[in-house]
Image (cartoon, rainbow over all chains, first blue to last red; front, side, top):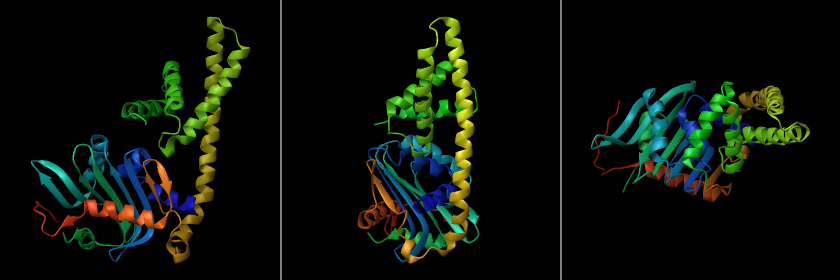
Length: 134
Length: 161
């Protein structure tokens, strides 16, 4: 079953470059990758959650994400000095009623974080999920 | 650790290889890179590494039996290419079988995922080391989610459509 779940993730991201990011860098040193299925985060049920925290490769990963960004609906973007430093993007559905999101935030140097989420949550709910009190 | 240059080089060569456009020297380079990086490659490339390792083994056997002059070398290369095409067909057939066996049952199973199997397939990979410890996995997931999260008092130029 684990193999089947992995296969599902491959399929879920088959049309997205973010899937390649996880495949290429997820097992690299200096990177932390997580994959969760049917998990609850801050009260929201997510079908698929995948994340990657990286200390290097920022430029390469940025190039992959650029491609996905072109085909996305922008939910939120933070631009500092003309550079996109953070963004939430909604991708085209592959299953009815199940939304797919890519979230990223650049850190210092080549570091950063990218998250892929799949679930029924709306863009408004995504914003609530990803807004925390300092 | 696998170098970024090697990843790019291997990616380009693999694309050319799968299109059947690589030269003999490029294929040797590809084999050499796969030997050099060992296990430090993306999961999707593991099948290629196994294929190339097998080819290396096979070519070595052929060369032992072949001659060392120029015409002999050409014959060895032709045999190697013929083997490659054959093994690619086998690999494609195996991949198709895995997809049929693995994915078709999943399609009917996916929406009925229960609490008992919900944790299967959950894992974290930290510096190349995989763990399925649920506390660690959840902690790492929350770390990433916090990293991309916005704070209420964050000063930003947000755009919402």
